[in-house]
Amino acid sequence: MSKILIVGTAYPYRGGIAAFNERLARQFQEEGDEVDIWTFTLQYPNFLFPGKTQYSDAPAPEALTIKRVVNSVNPFNWGKVGRMIRKGNYDMVVFAYWMSFFAPCYGLMARKAKNTKHIALIHNMMPHEGSKIDKLLTPYFVKAMDGFVALSKAVVDEVARLDKKGKPKDWAPHPIYDHYGPREPRETALQHLGLDDNYRYLLFFGLVRAYKGLDWLVEAFADERLAEYPLKLIVAGEFYDDKTPYVEKIRSLGLQDKVVVVDQFVSDDKVKDYFNAADIVVQPYKSATQSGVTQVAYHFEKPMLVTNVGGLDEIVPNGKVGYAVSPDPKSIADALVDFFANQREAEFVANIAVEKQKYSWSRMSTTIKNLLK
Image (cartoon, rainbow, N blue to C red; front, side, top):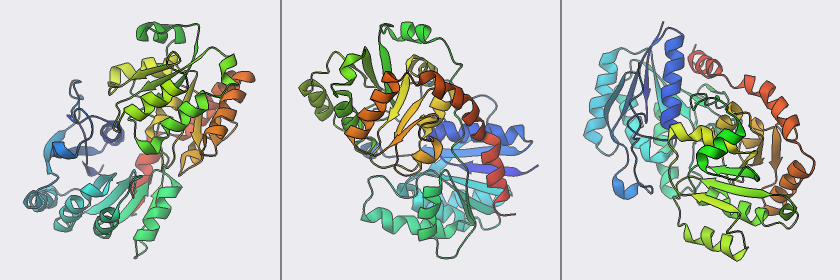
């Protein structure tokens, strides 16, 4: 049995990385480990947060020890928390890292707690929309870590370019998000959402940001070949970018009646309805490393369309569980036409049931534990 600390976002904060940290903690618990999660008293100052709220309105997760101790902007707190880690006598500290804003905080904490192993669990090494300051801050964090576990090969390569000492590195694919509820009949989900079951549905899910390529998907969806089918596009997620250009594009292409926009963060208990309702999940990203959305789609056994950027095509084998296509509207449209014209759904779903077995939480926990042995 090991004593493990996970440092990163968790309840009462919301979002995919919080869900990841909590699910990883449960996996360690299932393996007999003692696990704490230390999250933030302050995660982002409000003026830096682009959404409506950082906080979840769901009940606190049961049977997890989550403490709010880290202030992301107070250096005096970082040193204090580092000393707390040292006194905790942890066998391993897992720093859940996804943006350079946290590099100074995590880096100083690790330097103050030298009596334990520091493993960086990297969701994104460099931001999708990076700046010069990201290049300045990130190496400070990298130098403080003893090893790195990434969620895709592409991110391992990014880490290797920053790590000048050849520290241990490995990767394990993003495990399946299996905590959003069961698969249910499509008709049931559509009823819950108030949608017409005479249509087939494409799903774009998650926060809307420029790098996620929703504008490309809207252009692809306007392809005249797709007009032959009774299709609608669901956009379910809070807009972190200005919504106006997307709305104007939808209007200019005459798609007002074919695009359902749900501009809000989707709570955990509603996620299953959107995925159970969808015929195909589309991620037309312009840049990426990996994505938790694919792992929700795997759980609900939904075909996927991704662009072959970053590590997305590592997770979605082209022609097997969906499509990994060139990042442009024409390629996206071509794949969608193939999916509906050739009725690929049953074939892809059967393959997904097999392929999803690769993405276990035990693989992730084992990779982390074995890194520094």
